[in-house]
View 1: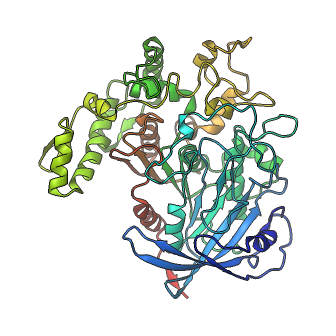
View 2: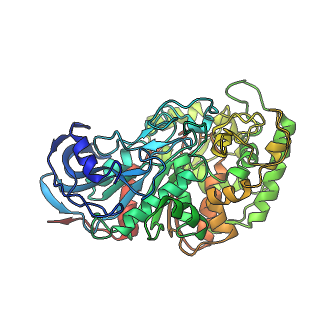
View 3: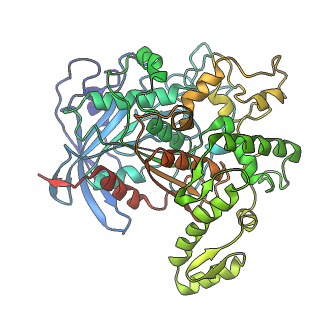
Amino acid sequence: MGIGAAAGAAAVGGTALGARAAGGGGSAAAGPLVFDPDAYTRLTTTVTDTDGTDHAVTYHFWKAVTYVADPVDVKYQSLNVSVPVEIDGTAVDASGAPILFANSVGGYMPSSVADATGIGGAGMGGGMPGGGAPSGSPAPSASASAPGANGSTNPTGGALDTNQRLALAAGYVVVEPGARGRTLKDSGGTYYGTAPAAIVDLKAAVRYVRSNRGRIPGDVDRIVSAGTSAGGALSALLGASGDSPLYEPYLKELGAADASDAVFATGAWCPITDLEHADAAYEWNWGTNVTQSTGSTVDQAVSKQLRAQFAEYQASLRLTGLNGFGPLTARTYDTYLVEQYLEPSATTYLAGLSAADRAAYLAANPFIGWAGGKARFSWGDFLTHVGARKKTAPAFDAFDLSTGENNEFGAGTTGARHFTAYGARHDTTGLGSRRVAADIPAKLRLMNPMYHLVDEPNPHRAKHWWIRLGTKDSDTSLTVSANLAAAAHRLGDEVDHRYYWDEGHGANTDPGAFVAWIAEVTGYRRRSR
């Protein structure tokens, strides 16, 4: 099993999260894709819930189980499994529990669970095989840098372990998959983690879990994906693209299990997705705000051209807003965002403050009108309130090929490529061709959940969506997640989409509510032994 279940149990040895380890079972499973139910280590940890109450949780931990038969790099193509067996002194039965499938990808970088010593131990980074530092790789874009965003993200913008730990304390099974990422290169300089490697790996991991029904504890028909930033995009893509035949050749090449890769529900925080239209959406949203790094606005000719592209794209989607809003167009989207998301977000925030704190906040932010317990303001005043935007223009497909997203579409020994016609046409690096490569359109379809929700609606998609974004998140456009929500809602899916007031990229201010939502949509009630 590569760095498999049996090897992982032996390797755990030490402790983490204040945990104590005790021996688990140990016979090796037959076959490379058969989960060994006995190859775990028994650990105990303390989980503090959102009310501040501590819970002692004893769980079985399977480390670095390789999830494909023919891995490219087992350091990244492996997963960890955590199963609660005792919570606050009461034995629990997780055999029918939902499975939280939580990736920690940020910035489309590699993610590995190989060094974890307990739940929540997935790590980031990677270059040469074995974890050496990447050389000659484009620097991460702003979307891959979210220091201190509500204390919920790792250094590259991926999720920390809050959701996983709360899910464990709620009695759920937690699966944490690793995945290849854009900076990985072999000894010959060939990139082997660029698109679509990450989503193919996560699909293979889902297939592994589902193929081991009855061996991996938990209900494999109730897998709930979760991720933040690029990991949020991948989580949304997992939800939208379940069992799509587009991925079959890639999965077959890895020796993925012969099982479904559909997930039941999706949690996505600030998803950096719809990349081929992300530059246009970003300029529509933040085009007139000054840039953090320069203190001035971006080239307004470029911004205007991209805003025109957004208008054309948005019209082509033919989406309507939630709650009977009507058509979502470039002309109506500002009103929609204010009425559907921003004012309700500010209202919730202000209602949660004490009278004195609320008065102080309103005095410091006089653009907000407060009457009848509701916040009111204009789109223009909101943009002024947010202040400087994080990215230059174009935000994702940079003319100089400098973003992490350019790296994500690298291929062979070429570390970065344009993935939009506009970016290629305005290239400043001296490329001989000003066109996107012939393979780019197919890769964009593989990486964009909107393709599976709008262009070719997928009947095997997740039917439950939890989507969150901070109102001050200028790593992306506020329209990206709103379009995702509108597309899923139009197909009849259940959508819970909200914005966190005054929070930035990677924020997760209601993790307890997310864990409760999982129980609600899956119909789960915890059972004691």
